[in-house]
Amino acid sequence: VGHLGEAYEKWVHQPIVTKDGPRFFANEFCELLTRTKWWVIPLVWLPVVCWLVCISTQRGLTPTEAALAVVGGIFIWTLLEGNTFHYLLHGCHHKHPLDGLRLVFPPAATAILCAP
Image 1 (cartoon, rainbow, N blue to C red):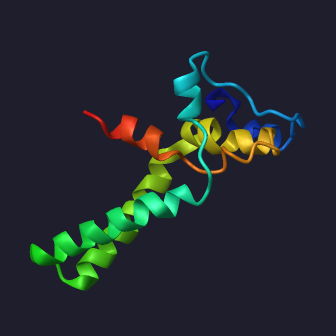
Image 2 (cartoon, rainbow, N blue to C red):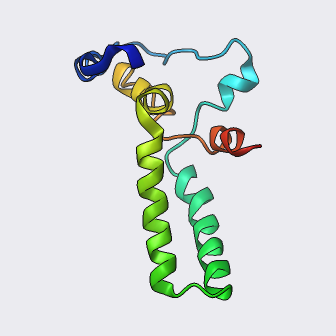
């Protein structure tokens, strides 16, 4: 996908309409980790963000500094996601619009990317 450059926008918006979305992995468990309902994201991440903001303010950050850190984190994630992650776990939705389980970046994939 990365090699498409400016042609990416045209390519990604030419849908493939099938009942099933694309398969990413031969392994069933790995494939399961690529599928997520949209509401799982706020269910997982809002408590994490709230906890981290509370810990940050307890350790001396002002509420303004904590809010700036949250906004900065969202901005940095948006920049780092890039074409590859965007296509793999959301952009495929543009190619396969009937695949409702790949609208968001799965928390399981995030955990794998965050592991040292």
